[in-house]
Length: 443
Image (tube, rainbow, N blue to C red; front, side, top):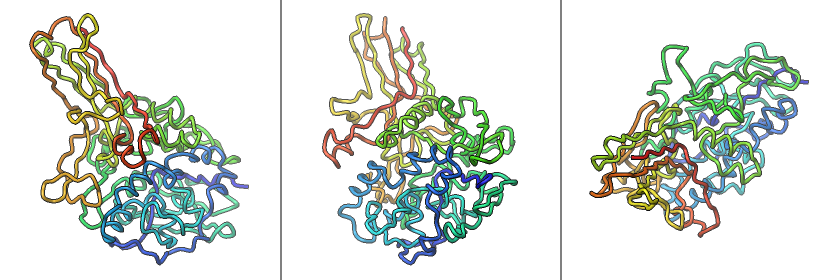
């Protein structure tokens, strides 16, 4: 029986000790038999396993949006570009596959990958981590055991854990942001272009305070959240009293393993009703809106968007794909729309002039590129840093400045519907749009 293994499937995993080259090594460092299936961990860590199951970590290699977009972006590339782009994905999405030498050339090609490796970012991978040698593209260092007969040392946040199945050890690395950051920073393998910078956004921001009472790490929000408790920067983040192992001691805080971000769609595809709702709760406690009513009388609509709850930029991740935008409408006293911006069309597509908060990559000569395999530079980044604001200004025509109702909504979805329809055909995957914040003013 396990007393307290503290299998802490930590936040966006970790990977290898490989040299950072433009090729994915097919010579594995570890035999696949050295890793323990997550179901085995779940035998003694039932609550934690149920939280992890159908999380975005467990579904990292089953995420249909990720797989379809990755496959689409790789079409027509040279072998060199294809391998480089794929490496920046597979190291974090299917880490055990990479470190055990599965011949991964593309992020969607798992025909030769063992079943355990397809289970995404899982217990034994994260809890075999000893540190990281770089803060991007999964620089995690591993010390796995030798399978269920000799599982080795499992590391976690407690100094007094005991187990009769495996050895245990306290790990400061597992309580800090670096174990998250090594996968939540992604650089282009060849051009070194920063493609995702979530860890750097936190590291340079106000939540990375030198004052321990003010410092909030990745775990402080994302591993405090549970149903009904969003645990963002704008809400309370109470401790989660409970048990790490089924027959272990009660702890003042057990890091939760739901690993919820802003994805309200993919867990629901696997019949999970809890995590999509938790993602909505997180999104709805991340930002606020305000309207300068006096400016409207002069024909200007100034809307301020403030990042009140995220420890990173809004949005974050691969933000040339994700969409966060401002939608406004202005109506007269009879309810007629006099002005609008950011409204989706009948296909669910954004208009070209929508006020979108995103990243735009370039080809190195100032020309925008949608494909991250060709991203040599960042042309634009107008996302909102932690506890900072952005102001968007809209101008009304004369004669439409009295007896008005102005409605503004900050909206989010995980990807462009237009891009997805281009890949899969219309109506194959209809992505939900979440209202992050809404405000209305009568003038």
